[in-house]
Image (cartoon, rainbow, N blue to C red; front, top):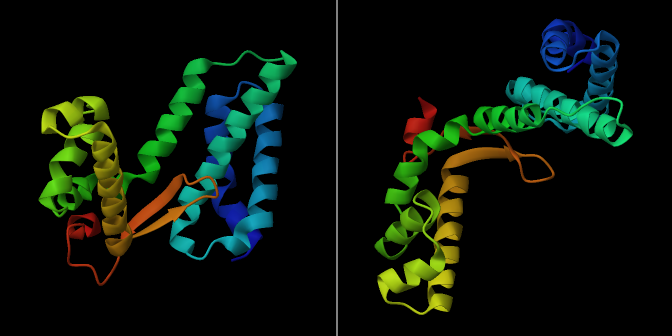
Length: 189
């Protein structure tokens, strides 16, 4: 994968995206330059060219957030709190597209002892202390059951999906594995 081709393919769209978030044209061009420095330094780490677009836009979003953090410290630019939140939401939405389609199927494949507990704790947001009362269990036992349920759910995802994460654990992309006919088969659609 040649960096010159990447630059040619993405330069205009990245600059437009950055300009939609940054007022200063010069600062936007500086951010774009920094993005391509990061890309050229790390492109060899990317194993799948199909994930290139998501990876590049993740780098760009993070660079924009860094720009606002640095300038907020210097008090040269005002931070738009909503922008940082919006960028984080965009990243989450883009990066977990495949996961939301198969979450219910994955949860339904959990053993019964974990299924309801995971639905209550993770989807409904019920606190573990309240769950312990609901299920008539000791709090420490409920904590262990929730943790084991989370681990089983995580294992189901890793068995059926190729999940690429950055060094911080943020999900970059999700794809169904070719040989999976299990609960995440809908992810392949």
